[in-house]
Amino acid sequence: MSTVETADLRATTRSVYITFIFLGVAMASFAARIPQIRDHLGLTPSGIGLVLLAIAAGSITSLPLAGHLVHRFGSRAMVGTMAVLLGAALAAAAIGYQHGVVPVVVALYVYGFSTGAWDVAMNVQAAVVERRLGRSIMSRFHAGYSVGTVAGALAGAGAVKAGLPVTQHVVAACVLVVAAVVIAVRGFVPDESAAEEGAEKTSGGALAAWTEPRTLLIGLFVLAFALTEGAGIDWINIALIDDQGTDASTGTLGFAVFLAAMTVGRWFGPNLLDRYGRVPVLRLLALTGLAGLLVFVFGPHPAVAFAGALLWGLGASLGFPVGMSAAADEPAKAPARVGVVASIGYCAFLGGPPLIGFLGDHFTVSRGLLAVAMLLVLSLALTPALREPTAR
Image (spheres, rainbow, N blue to C red):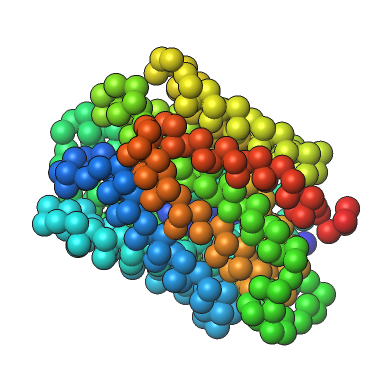
C-alpha cells in the first residue's frame, strides 16, 4: 500500500470512528433523560417499555431496506442523510414530551428508522476499512460508539445534577451530532472500491441472504447480545433508582459504568480476537455477561450492583460488533448479510422493552432483567457460526 493510500485509509478510519462516536452520543443523550420523561408523562415500567418500543419498530422498518439502499446510494450518503433525520427526530421527542405521549412515540419511531439505516451503512463502511487493514478492528469502531455513549451519559448525569431541562439538553446534543457527522462522512470511500480481487455483486440480494443458515445463526447470536446490551442501556438507571433506591444522578452514573465497561471491552477486544479467535473469546464474554447480570440483579447494595453493571458491560461488549464483522466476511455480499443480521438483532429492541417492562410491573425491573440470561445461555451454543472463514 502506497503512502498516499495509507494516508487516505487513516482519514477514512477517523471518519468512521466519528460516525460511530456520535451515534453513541445521540443515543445516550436521550437515554440518560428517560427517567425524567417517564416521570413527566406518569408512565409505569410497562408504559415506558411500550413507548421505547417505537424505537425498535422504526428500526425494524428500515433494516430490511438498508442493504438495498446502501447498494444504491452508498454508505456515505446514507449515514449523512440519516444523521440529519435522527437529529430532527430526537429534538422533536425532547420537545414533544411536554405535550403528551403521542408526539414522543411518533418521534421515537422516526429516530429508530434513522438509527437502523445509519447502523447498517456505517458497519458496511467499517467492514471496508477492516478488510483493507487486514486485522480485526470492527470492535474498536464499536468502542467508538461506546465512547460516545459514555460521553453522552456523563453529560446527561451532569445535566440532571445541574437541573438542565430535558429539551435544552437533548436539542443541543442533536445539533452537535448532526454537524459532526455531516462533516465526517466526506472522508468515506466508495463501498465497492474495497471489494477484493474483482468480487462480483451479490446475486439475489437481501432475499438470498435470508435463506443462508450461517447468516441466520449469526443473526440469532447478535439478537442475544443486542438484548443484553439494550437491556442495560434502557433499564440499568431505572432499576437502580426504583429497586436500589438511588437518586437520579447516581442511577445515571450506574448507566455510565455499564457503558464504560463496554467501551473497554471493545477497545481491547481486537487483540484477544486476533490471538485466540472469535469463538473462545465470545464464549468467555457470554459467561462474563451472565455473571454480571446475576450480580446486578441479586446484589444487596448499590455498590454491588455497580460491580455487576461493570461485568455485564464487559460481557456485552463484543457480541454485536463481531456479529457484524462475521456477516461481512465476504465483501460482495456484505451489505445484504449485514442488513439481515442487523434486522434479526434489532428484534431484541422490538421485544425487549415491553417484555422487561411487563415483568417489571409484576415483579421488579431487576427481576425482569433475568429474561436476558436465557438468551445469553443460548448464545454459547451459537458461537461456532461466527468462526473466521480461514479457520472454518
